[in-house]
Every structure is written in structure tokens, then in C-alpha cells.
Image (cartoon, rainbow over all chains, first blue to last red; front, side, top):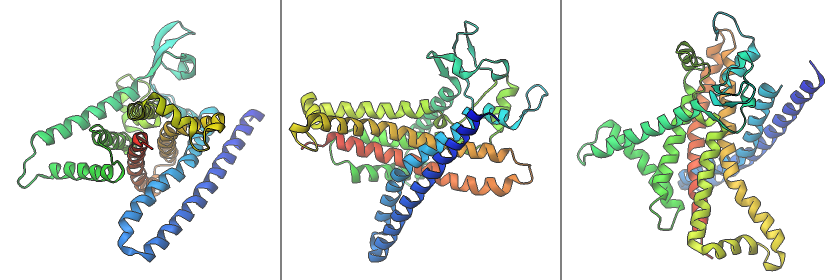
Length: 78
Length: 278
């Protein structure tokens, strides 16, 4: 395997690893706040839940873009 | 997937499943033709005048199916006891209507139908990802079509097309509500006041462009990663496939609905922001 291919794999690995960290920390925090809010006011849970999913989609966007690009790098470039 | 008797290596299998049915002008052979990686006609040699025929077929086909189904239900709608299809369609329309009403507080007859179209169309296109990886490409191969990617939203062209349409609507409604001067003023004088115009303009233009690009790439990234994992699972031995593909397919059902919902909600939010008048 030549150097160029090896470097592309390494780049894809770093890309996906950092994306995973970002997504996990962000959504973990968000989920924690959601649970706190749900514990404080259980009658608001449906409203909080739908807003939780909306914000989760936003937080997940850039890590998902990273995952998509990483997959593309691993399989279509190298 | 074997073509004409020879077996593929695993990377050939993967790249075969990731290639769209590109049709266009190929400079090497100076002809209008389909892509054919086994004979050296690669997708990247096609240049600008190329179209992904499979994406177009599936996206337009699914759009027409959605329109036909909902129109049929709307025409046959009764106010008595509804049938199950009418129930289902009504619950979806009510769901979209609730979401639009909670986010969009202005008067615009386009937003709710647009939201419904985006939600159902994106959901149907994503749903194609749950069909087993090899079924449709195998049938297409038997009919002589070399490549067939069933999921239009794994093609960034499709998602960027939808996102650019939403971007066009954002700019159109901004200019319609605030006038060209008002729109440009909002870009130049927010957030820091008129003495920081270049800085404001830079931030606001980046923010404005980030909206459609993030819409498109969020959907593309989710769907591409999902499809890729299905392809990788398909390369396992047949006795090991069920253990992985069932949990992943279950998770994927959540992801496709969520991504369609997020695309719809963000479209409504961006259009509501376009109607905002300070």
C-alpha cells in the first residue's frame, strides 16, 4: 500500500474520530439537560422531546457530514 | 454481485454499489454514454454535462407516487368513519400542520404544503435504503442496466438540489417581505451596527450560505453513512448478516424519519426567519 493511500486512511480515521467525540459530548449534554427539564416539569415532556430531537439533528449535522466524508474518503478515494 | 460470471473483490463490490448510473458526455471516447467502470469509463471523466439517471428516476418516481397517493385519498375523503389509508394520511397532514403552526406565525399559503412535500418526499427517498442492498441492482443488471443506486438522498446532487430550492425561497421571501434594500440592510447592519459593515456582511453571508449547505450535507451524510454500513454488512458471510443488519436497520428506521423531520422543521424555521421584520 503506498504512502498516499495510507495517509488518506489516517485522515479519514482522524476525521471520524473527532466527529464522534463532538457528537457524543454534544448530544450527551443535550440529553442530560432534557432529562433534567423532564424531571422538573413532567407535563412538558412531549414539547421538550420534540425540541430535543430538533436540536439533536442540528448538533449531529456537522459530525454526520464528517462521517459521510470519512466514508467517502475511505472507500471511494483510497 | 457477479457480472457475467466473474467474481468481484470486496473493494470492487463496494465501489460498484457506490456508483450512480451517470449518463453524459465522455471526452475520452467523445460520445454520450453511460458510466462503465469495468471498461474504464469512470464517473469522474464525465465533466459537467452528466446526469445521474437512477437518482432522477427514483426521486421523480417517488414524488409522483406521493402526489398520486395523497390526491387519491383527498378525492375520496369522507367525513364519516375513515378508512385506514385516509386515517394515516390525515394523521400525517395533522402532524405537519401542528409543526407549521407552532413555528411559522405569518400568512403564507406555500409553507404548509411545502413542509408536507419535503417531509413525505424525503422520508420516502430515505425509506428506499431499507430495501436489501443487492435486490434492485441485481434485477437492474439482469435488465442490462449496469448500476442502480436506489436511494436518491445518498446522491449529494439530490440533497443539494432540494437545499438550493429552499435557499432560493428564503432569499425570495426575504426580498418580498423586506425589499431588496431591507434585505441587504439586514445583512450589513446586524449584529454590530453600521460602522462594522464588512465584518457584519462576512458573518451574515456565511450564516446565510451555511443554511442550505448544512441542510443538504446533513441529510447526505446521514444517508450515505447508513447505506455504506448496509453495504459493508452485506459483505459478511450469510450466517452472520442477520445479527448486524437487524439492529442497524431498526436504528436506521429512526434515522430516516428523524432526518426527514429535521429537514422539514429547519425549512419552516428558515422561512419564518425570512419573513421576520424588525
